[in-house]
Image (cartoon, rainbow, N blue to C red; front, side, top):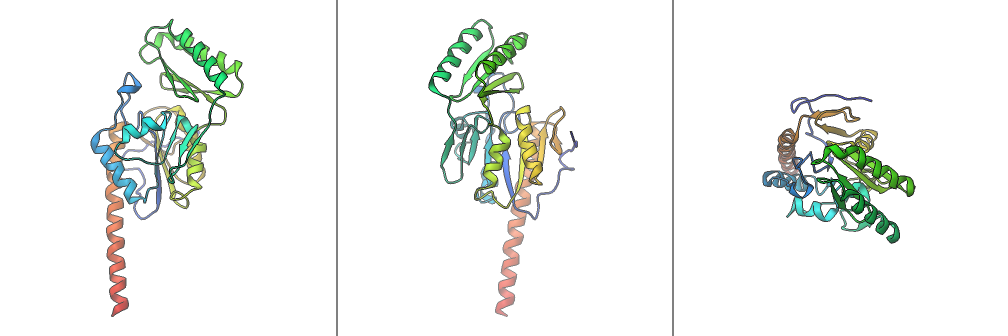
Length: 271
C-alpha cells in the first residue's frame, strides 16, 4: 500500500492538461456533521464547482454514498453527472439514470429487521436509500459492535449483498457496487473519456475509487489521516476548498492563454 503525504504546494499542478473531476461529498466538499441531514457545501465552494464544471466542459461528477437526489440538493443550483449510493445509481452527462435495485421482498425484510434492531440502541440512525441501508452510530459509538454484528448477520442471510464500512457508519449494499466501478464507467463516456481523472475522497468507501484512478494514471487525493491507496493527501476539508480554488485559477489561466495563442495564430495566418 502506497501513501504519499502532500500539502497544497506539493500536489501536482493541473495546468496544461485535460482533466475529469470526481468528488466525494461528506468529509471532502462538506464537513462531517453529527447527522447526515445537517451536512452542507458552502456557497463559495458551490460557486467554485460551477466554475470547474464549466471550465472542464462538464467533465465533473459527484461520487458519493448519498442518493443522487440529495447530491442535487447539496450542489444546487449546479446539477452534475453523479454516482449515488456508491454507484448503485449513476446519472451520466446525457441525463440517463442507471440504477441497481433490490428485490422488493428483500428490501422489505431488511428494512423491518433493521428498524426493529436499531430501535433498541438510542442515538443510532438508520438511513434508507432504496437499494441500500446506512447504519449510523456517530452519536452512539458504544453500540459500534452491535451495529456491525447486525450488518454482518444480514449480509450472511442475503449473499447478494455486501458490507461497506465507513466513518461511524456501515452500509449494506448490492455486491459489485463501488465508487471505482462508477468512475471507470464515467471515464468511458463523453465528456470524461480521454481526460486525466482526478478523485478526492476521505473514507474507506473511496479506496476503490483511488485504485481505479491510479490504474488510469490519474491523480488520487486522500483527505485526512489513515493509510490509503491514494497518491496524495490533504489534511482536511479547508485544504480541499483551497486546492479547488487553485485549480480553478489554473484552468482559467490555461483558457486565457489558449485564446490568446489562437488569436496570434489567426493574426499570423492573415499576415
